[in-house]
Length: 96
Image (cartoon, rainbow, N blue to C red):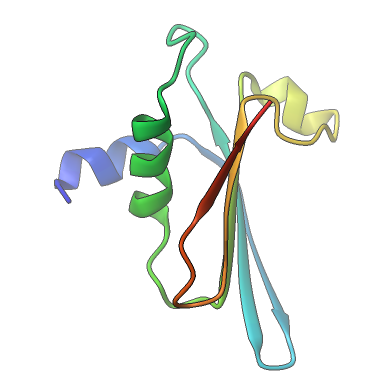
């Protein structure tokens, strides 16, 4: 993966939470999907997920939002969610 792609998405991370349950390591990201890009493609969302997922955690969830205010309001993802629920599992993308 190109460094610029990884940096682009890392700069858009609003929150990064690590939650460890017994032997399960879990990471949850809340990411800003630029509202100027009204139609973020599935490819771009997967690119963001892959840039953030370092495969060191058992489970990784990335919630995508249109604004930081939506995160502050405690809303669930407003654009999409990508989740990997196992080290060898494929990530699943769910759109709003």
